[in-house]
Amino acid sequence: MAETAALERFEDYVSRFEQTAPEIQANIELKKAHTLRVLAEAQNIIADLGLEPDEARPVEMAALFHDIGRFPQFARYGTFQDRMSVNHGLLGYKELRKNQLLPKLSRANTKRILLTVLMHNRAQTVPGLPPGLDRMLRIVRDADKLDVIAVLLKHFDPEQPSNAIVTLGLPDDPATISPAALAQVRSGQMVRYEQMRCLNDFKLLLLSWVYDLNFRHTRKEYLKRGYVRQLVGTLPVSFDIERLEQQLLKDLWF
Ligand SMILES: [Fe+2]
Image 1 (cartoon, rainbow, N blue to C red):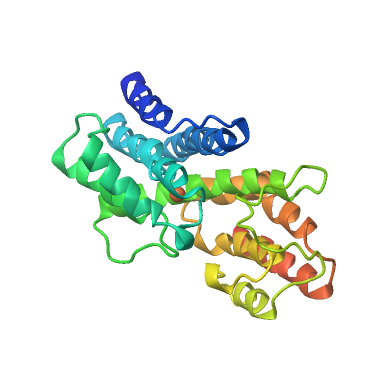
Image 2: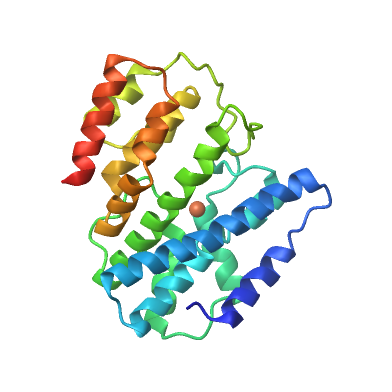
């Protein structure tokens, strides 16, 4: 259980960025709710791994503060796109240091949390990290992905109002897919943000996250929640997409 004092500190920090217009404030609320769900997702991974409480607590803190940079980012720039504003991992790292938001922990754990926040949004896991940091970073990245997909699936629903801030302002042409993005995920690699030309490419990028999952629990949840099926269901029907779905389901199993 993440301690109440840390949760209060998180909420207090977030409240500094409150916006007067409700439709703008909704974006702050979205990230706040995302954070709390990522914490819960991380706790499930922690439970599945059977970590001891003294190992679990710093990982929980990393999950709770992983997106802290999103709040000043949105307040200053009105966007969640790092390329159009700042790297929110770096901003979070700086904010945590400046505001002393973390609870009292050992120096080693404080450093691990700061570095996890700094690196959580890298395109790929960073190779060669010390084991404690490596595990923390991998747990936060998996927990983050589990929740981001659920959030985005809601926004891809044509019945729901679209939110350009969430869908990165990408043009939604339902019939278009970039061959390069499709080829990338077909070859078992992550689609890169700069490869995206339209909303369907973003969906391919999310599907390619199958190749960046670290834990059994996360893979099981991907299958159980039907993330591949649901994402594929928002793409145009074609033989290539059908083959892609088969490939991703097979690769999730093994
Ligand atoms: Fe993030």
